[in-house]
Image 1 (cartoon, helix red, strand yellow):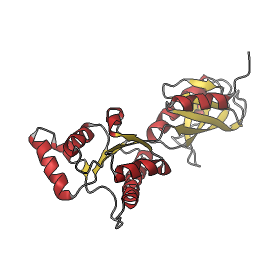
Image 2: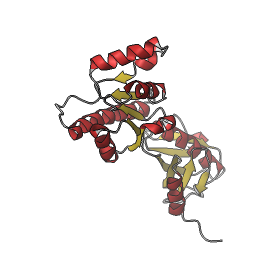
Image 3: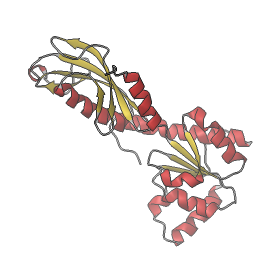
Image 4: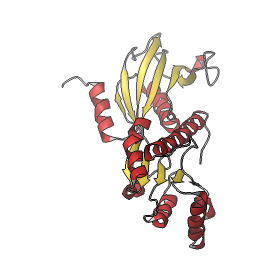
Length: 253
């Protein structure tokens, strides 16, 4: 049987687009089957591809990987004998997990999460919408047209840049999606009028309150590319704020 190449496995997981973590053994002490430098991929379902050590290490890695994926941030964990664990973390700040394995060894493991970048769903075909889709990749986003709104998830972003071409329908679809952040290229007055119509048609107030209009940060933007930059800057601010909150274990809307 050919030797497993963990980097090939990692690339295969990336091509599938499903979230996973890479676990790397950083250091070992005393007897342990894990060796420094060993790597494994941990899927969102908890499957471990590669070798990191015995069952005690694997349980800890699965738990830490699930949390790393949820928070979207890397972390280091330490698996050590139960009788040596005196708290949730060691004095150096590393989170500890108890091991009941007979080897009695200690293992430090780096857990690095990977998932596809958030989607930026853009409604509209005008110059601003085109500029947003053109520049989205530079901000680490996957730009998609409004027809992809059915694929949107809570961590994605939606911008309505229809500018008079089907504004109401696009705004309704955007606000009915699970995306946490929805913005619209429109004046406050126009956005308010559209929201009033949606409210009269029965849309819940909580959904309407998610709308940010005008879209973007106030940087004095004038042409479509400048406006797109201001919108992307706002999206980046939202994304980074959510990441910091997740790292603290908080929930964001």
